[in-house]
Each structure stands twice: as C-alpha cells, then as structure tokens.
Amino acid sequence: MIYKEYFSKKKINQVIFNRKINWYFDIKSILYQKKANFLKESKDHAKILNNDFINLKIRNLNKNLYKKKSVFTKKINWIKFTQGKDHNFRSRIKNIFLFLHKNNIQAYTKFFIVHGSLASRDYIKGWSDLDTFVVIKNEVLNDVKQIIKLRKVLRQFYLKLEKIIPFQHHGLILYTEKDLQNYLSGFLPIQALEKNFNLLANEKIQMKCVGTKKNLSLLSLKERLKYLIEGNKTGVYQHHAYKGVGLKNPLIEEKNQMYQLFCHIGYMLNIPILYFDATGRSLHKKKSFKKFYQTIKEKKIINLIKNSEKVRKFYGKKKIINNKIPKWIISTLGNKYLLDSQIVIKRTIFLINKYNKK
Image (cartoon, rainbow, N blue to C red):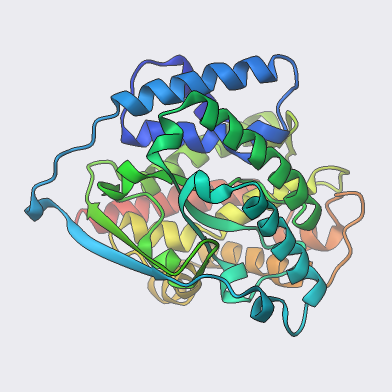
C-alpha cells in the first residue's frame, strides 16, 4: 500500500491528497492492516487529512483552461434492480447499500455513484467488483471526528461487502468537492460513468475538466511495471499482497493466492482503457477492448488480454476451493503470466510514448 507513505511527507497537492483519502478509506487499509496501533494511526491520519484539506489550494481556473462537463445520474430503483434473474444476489447488494442509508451516508457524501458491471448489469458473480464514484462533502474533511466516523461506517460496509464480493480489492473511489472544481486528467475518465446509478438522488454532477502535465494513466503503468520487475526477480509479486503475503511467481496452485492473482488480472484488463486515456482518447471501458484490438496489432499484447478475459468470463462457471488458484486458470494464463505481463506493460508504455510524440 504505497500511498500510505504520503502520510509521512509534508508535500501536498491535489493528486497526493486524492491518493491519501483513497488509502485512508480503502478496504485494504481498513480490513487487512495489522490491528496493532490501528486506532491511534486512524486518528493521527485523520488529523493529517483534515490539515491537508484545509491547506489544499485549487487553481483559480481561467475559463479558457477548462471544459465544463456534466454527468447525469438517476437514483436507483431497488424494486426494478432486484427483479428477474439473480434476485438473491441483487437483494444482498441492495441490503448493503441500505446499511449505508441507515448509517446516514448522505451526511458524508455529496454524490454516491455506482458504475461498472453492476450498473450495466453484465457482472459476473464472484468475480466482478463494486466500482464507485463518491464525492466527500467539504464539512466532513473539515472535521476530524467526521473523518473517523466515516471510516468506521465504511469498515462495517466492507465487512458486509466482502461476504458478497470476496475479491473486492479496492474500496470506494473517492473525490472531494474541490476535485470537481479542477477535475484532472488521470482521475476516473468521465466516460466510465456512462452507465451508472445514484444511491442518493437524481442528480447532475458538474465538473471543470482540465489537462495536467502529469499523465496519471501512464504513471500507473510505470508504477505497476516496477512491481512486476521486482516480482520477477524475487519470485514474489507484492502488489495487492493479501494480509502481507504476496503472489508466488511463477504461478502455482496455491491456497489463499487467488485474491492476489485476481487483483492483477483486473489490472491487466484495464490496459485498453489506460492506453486510450494515456493517449488522450478516453472512452468507456466496455468499448475500449474492441477498439484496442483494432488499434494494437501486436499478438503478445492481444493474447495476454484475451486470455485474461477468458478467466473473467468462465470464472463464475467454475468452482474455486479455499481461494486456491485452480489448474484451469494457470493453463489459460500460463505459469509465466507475470513475466508476460511485464513484457506487455513495457511494450504498452512504449506505444503510448510513440503515439504522444506524433
């Protein structure tokens, strides 16, 4: 959890603050950290967030520097959502969101949007995770006690969520009201919210979208490449380690390793959308695959992503015992999947740089 390191540094800007709140309220930092000093650390970090938010300066944008964009959202109709197939599964999803309502989530959040496969209804039970776009209210970040209270509510929410979605590897994806006034390239692409539902109300979210010198999607690929290089040297891939335990490399059938592999497969399935976002051509994730395959003609890249898609597609039809990586997944991906991933990401970075130099 590299973003925790930002709490020990004095530098603060919009990107760093966004990473801090997403670490502080993340499922990994709340559920999977060691319990020693957890409460003290939670309070100490809440004070840092509060101080940082008060001092966080957002550029006073000239009208020529940004484009106003709007996202229209509609409040979820739970009766319609739970009708038809998967009634039991969708009812469980409904109940964990009702838990948030009962715990006054509207007092903490200005917007609470669900997007991704749950919103578009093409989820795969046991595989698909919960994707959100949540904006925290200013008054919460201006109050240390409210920050801590929200973390406590989310802890109970995540405990319920992981019983339904066992491989949920990230928490709510969070932004601030200040972020909406200066929505940076590299935050969640607006196109990702094309299919959505709103937990709170029918609303229109307005943003001032600006460019930035930092290419955050490209930076994400470079950061992941470092982890892969290290993991291929040491034999243990430490990104999204589960309770401190990394993924053994090369892949083998191993109990309690499917979580780590799931997280990495999910990232590799983001390569198309990261590629297009990093080259200034953002689009909805579902649409990105077809266009990516038409644009990128390299078999090594295409085969790896398509094999990752196969695992996602067939996962719900297969049995996973004790979180153990099954033979069929290793056969589909190859036991050198992480080495192949390193090669593919390195090549993708090259193609992004090549395109951006045009």
